[in-house]
Figure (cartoon, rainbow, N blue to C red):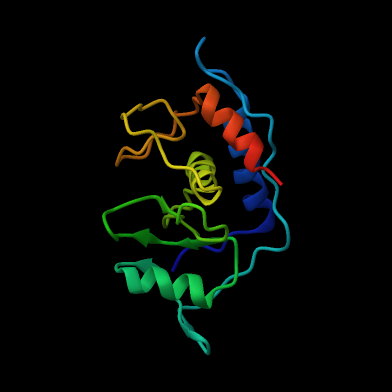
Length: 162
């Protein structure tokens, strides 16, 4: 089972995502003037709920759908995602509240993954060119040092903020 996430840990992750989008890593990098904040309390869920299955590992599209349908939250934290491939996060483009992120057994839950998935729920796709230093990179491997935004991405983050 995934180690429980506390309100303080969620706040720390969101503060990290805010920092990532506000730093400039290179001359071409842009800052997004936004702040990620938590609304409401973090709560645990068990994998068998009265309303239906709540998987702790996402192996199939059905697992993902059950998680979205049966756990009412903006961000759902699981111990692994193996669908459609190994990933650290997933979200449906343009569907707020469809985020699933991994927090591994050691408690690792990287802020850049949360920033990246929040981007998708705002209706925005990732870059089509692999850019390892970009938050919005669609590469397959997690890049904990990636914090670059281009001008379009920074403006889009700002426009998507409530």
